[in-house]
Length: 180
Image 1 (cartoon, rainbow, N blue to C red):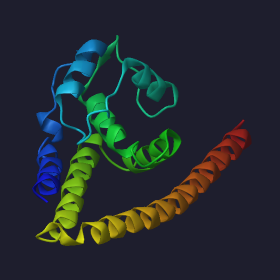
Image 2: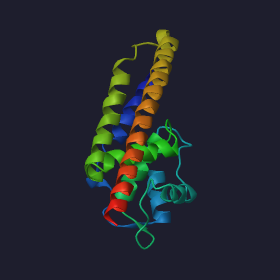
Image 3: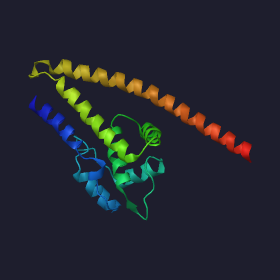
Image 4: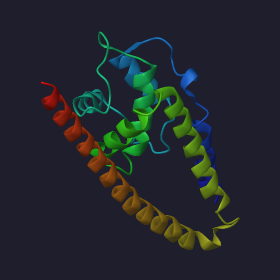
């Protein structure tokens, strides 16, 4: 149980990184990779981000292009969120979620809210853990079922967001055709 509680505390500690604590100078790709490898954005060792992944995120529109081969705080915030979200969502769904939410506000506010949500969720899971190891299998089952239901509901919501996005694009296209 100590190992599980330590993991929960580690996840909560990772969220103390707010947007204003990200490097305020632009970084080259190798520096971004080094920074991310030293950042504890994941509790699992194999959740690394590679240069190829970053390039794919840019191609897929999840991440803005680098400015003169340099990546800003904005890029780092997006990469840290993508790294977590890709554990449960497809890259396409991650992009859809981030684009629709970030379009409504600043990346700084969104990232800080995201970090707060991760901490709040980790605390909630930690608070639901028993004091001893006797009920571990029932806790694991409850978490698995919760994850299953959350994923299904999330996919339905993402489908609705995608429909809305497609409708908005169609309306914009019609408006621009009418104007010309």
